[in-house]
Image: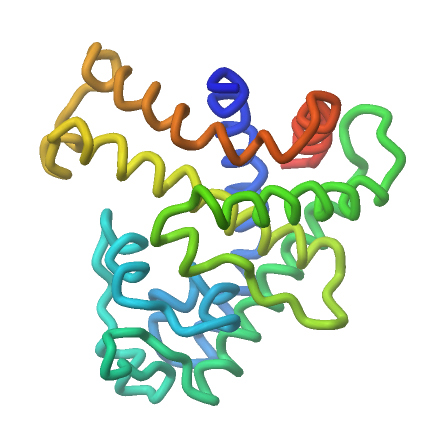
Length: 239
């Protein structure tokens, strides 16, 4: 299963990054219309629309970069609760829904192109959404603070398969992100030391192996055939 987790990671990242890139023009229009740098809302709108982000979740998702929350507060988009959780205001929810719609629009445009391979289209998107949903359910038992903060993602009643896949795929990535943070922390390495560490050293390879070990259990929710199907659908998606 460790090998599968290692294979799944680049497949997921390719599809996710291509999808977000496809929605860039839509996102730019939303951001320019709001007149504020969206920061946390841009990356975590699906989770924030579902629930406030607790302090430990915020610390986890901002490990590698610290967003400036002041503009979002000044524009009345978020509030900080007494318990340290970030919560969307009504205006913030409207903005987050606009971001979600922009991301979904880009996904629809990208994934409406003729896919690679011979899979019947667009049925694989619905199937991928189902497989992702089962993975997210399994992750409730193995995910860390970032995953718990964003899972399950908010899904409108009229959500298209593309919107559902976009949100669930982004959420799934945080299961591995938690595994990676836990792996280098367990090795007694600081973030600065990690960032300075070459990728081809035994120490770094050990961290990646430990990351795969911690990430792998989520994929036990799928049968062997379903795990192959999951990778096949990801491979067929354009981008």
